[in-house]
Image (tube, rainbow, N blue to C red; front, side, top):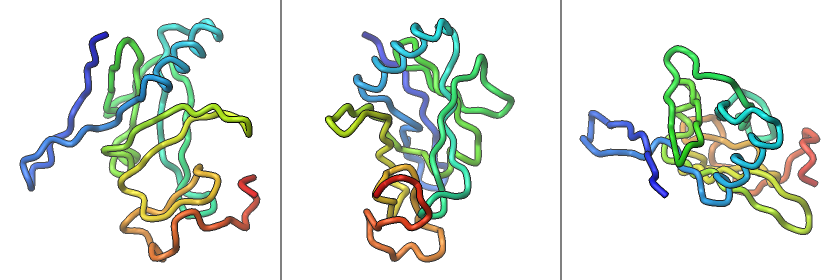
Length: 146
């Protein structure tokens, strides 16, 4: 299987940063979901929005095509769409799919997060206020991680 990874150049340091990567498990699950929903040519929009227990939260949705200014990542026939603002928070992240006895779902390993909620759906970025909170802190806003 060939993998095409779009890379972003950090002009200040002249190094290449991987934009976003899918593990084999995530890639297989996405391919399965696209087939089950009969939307084989759609891509997965991955985004960051305000909210959640830690200040920012991850979101994902299937979309038929990329929007203007999106970064498009193609990996073995699976497309990811990321808007420029979300890309600032997601650069270098890896998306995995985990399936455990407690349930399954997509998990984002984000090197830009300094702390995250116990549920893994929200995080605090390096430049966010209060970033000194411990990773895995419990949440009180009812995200369901308890």
